[in-house]
Image (tube, rainbow, N blue to C red; front, top):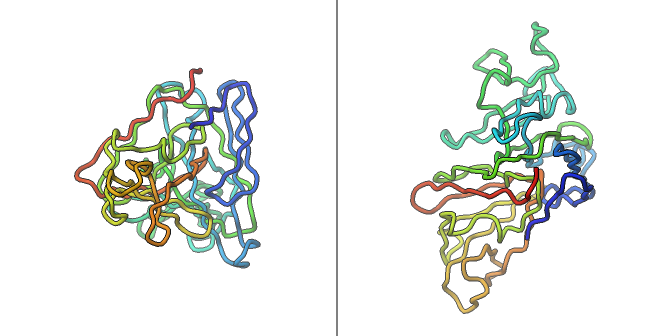
Length: 280
């Protein structure tokens, strides 16, 4: 069941996948925001940087049904901790499925050029480059990514226009991809991606398509069960293994959550979600 965030109503929710105790999403006049509390060095284990898997379920204000994407400077800005190099600044890591590696951006405050100060940058070989000039570093509804917080616990505000496009589409390819639900509503995993979309079900967790969720400290792996086994309630459902037993998954994907999808079936497919609200 999806929980819809109407334009004129304030809705609170708990951001489970980030391990965040309190988070609020508000959508007045079709503009919404999400507050994410990113764990940092004062969260156990103390003194270590922390990772949070996030997503931006909004489009730039004024984008309307055309959708659109944000640069990191637009959506995050200077709200995180800057540093003089990629090794001491906060980072955003975006998965490059084609090359099976990460694109790493960092909030820069070093270098000789004032054009790159307080900007999200990446290393192009030995040279500092602006993420805003490289489309590979844009974020949009349906794309997930990591944020590495090297400082103390930090509140990150993600702001944008509630998507009004009737359909949200994600291309699911072979192997791993970091994705997100493309609308700012809470969604149970059982209503997420199914065999009707093209997902591959199997009786073995190691042969079926998988959802891999980040709890804040570790991964939770779900697999799409097929119609084998004694319990018909688990047929074509996302499950997890508890010992030798299949268990029905009840996890919720909240606005602001990113997650991994592992495609084990043959060929790619398009995951298409209809807009789950009637406005705007």
